[in-house]
Length: 256
Image (tube, rainbow, N blue to C red; front, top):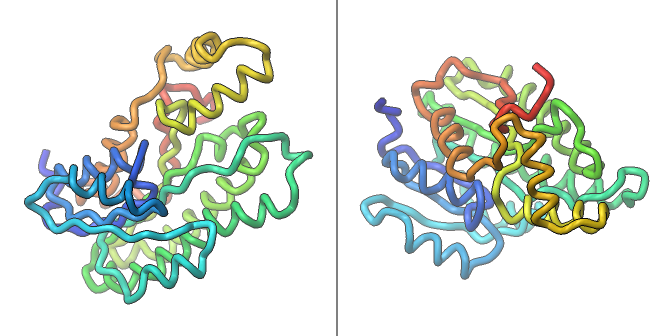
């Protein structure tokens, strides 16, 4: 299937590891020019050298915990057809124990920075009559996940922001969708497994098997599987898919 992505330009968040990195490579394979964005310049340079050499790739160093820094690093308006918003989740913990500043910091990283990136890219998307805004959030927007109180709250804020935006931008040929990873084999999942294992007094290996048992597919997802879904949503073939929450979770989410 020709996804009609050749020579499109994409800005991919959190693209030095995990789902973000896999997405950058999946899009590049379809002929997309990639701009990586993350806070570690050494890692950005390393990923940049691994991308296909027949395209115009680059990177932006930005700290999403500081929205003003992000604005400064972005500079002039960006010529991006595709924006993949992907930022590491807030730390785990009970919501009753979360300090107010944890919510404020997470809101800045996930909502305010998403808004900055959209406004940075929107004029070009409108002028091209083509735009894809894809937010990597969590299945918690359908079912809150125990022990991830701040994340549950903020991820739902992003989902509602995105749904509102989808309605506003559809007439310009711009779609806005959310991808909801389930248990995906990334550093973030390793951290969650470690915390759960310590809390339950078991080993990380045993906890991983317990968590796989919650998934009908009986395994964790791969970052590449998320990247494939994101790449399709970024394509011309997905032009009539707009404003959705797409779980990529092996069937774990029980809600419709």
